[in-house]
View 1: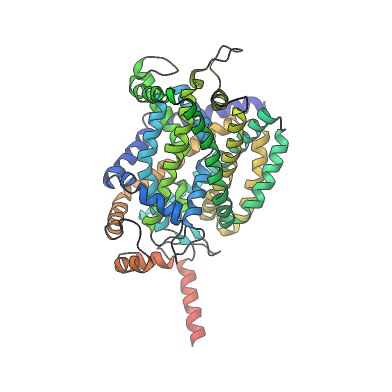
View 2 (view 1 turned 90 degrees about the horizontal axis):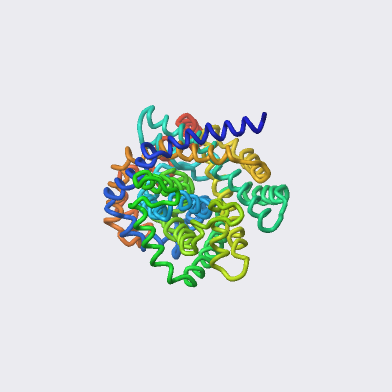
Length: 512
């Protein structure tokens, strides 16, 4: 009975997800919003990528700025949450079903998504507040309400907060734990319950410390895991350098000719390539979902534009570097259309990347590299998404619920490691889409503010070299600047109007 129920749920969530992620709903909205913001911002992601990388990866922090973690830690926390199973299994799924052309659409999603990622991170910092524990708190759950006046903005904010809270247990918890336990069992014969127990303990140790603990761990962990995985992929591409031009030609031609792994008539194959490329692309880099804005809001930065640009580089690193490496390895080694000699069928997407690395590296240990990489990617995603979840729980219930949420979130990791999760995977896809919908609507409605303030800032500091005093000089008369500096953005969560009046009255009484 229980099995039948789970199968029915998996089918139900899958049907809804296919509509949300279909060619007539979220995909055109995602691409359209990213393209619209790209045009209005003047191709900001192309012209300011270099200075943004320098600020985020080399300078790493703004002296004298307020926030809970450095700009670099905010970037690595967002990377921790996004560089996960989507970069390994998601890429393989897109190419396995949509053909090599799907990788092209993942690139397109990433490139236009950088404008969306910049915009949501800008808004996350611009409308952040300070909670009762003295920590910065922001994201779509706040900026949709504070930026869009009236009940519609509040509805979008609450819709996002509920969707994100539910989604964090899927995309950021159980699916990640399940991927880790399944791969460790397959590669090293580690029992799933052992993996679940170890992961639960490690998660709880890190997560109970909050964003500062998460930031410290991800700042040291994320660069190592990316270099480890990308380094192995580059070795394979160098060893197969003669196959790279043909692979690139295949990617570009099949993105438009409709020749895909699933066959069918040309039009349907093009749609499949676009659909899976965009859907898996957004699953990988989360541009437009609004999640990274939550990490950006915690950053120590002297201006929202600066952190927005740093956060934008997350999509570049995730998609243009990590996803590209995975995709090219799968295509150049021929793993994308490899037929299993035992079954006579194409190998499953969950095994495709492992086979590609085994084909490309000497010996039989390529799949171990993928397993270790997936373990690191997925564990870091658990850390990042716990923070996303707790910020939305705070928005819905209040700060008092944050610590219990961290404990429950850690315990749920064990469930993910030891349970069959077909329904949860479909549920995650559905909730990802439901998170993106209100956020994308909000980005379009707030695009005027984003463009106006971005142009003003970059007019005075095009190379992101201004110090705090210089920024103050050209921002002092700007609307909302004093509120932002004080952390008292209108509608801020850190103190209600009644509480502020009460504190003011108490202060006056003491002075008298």
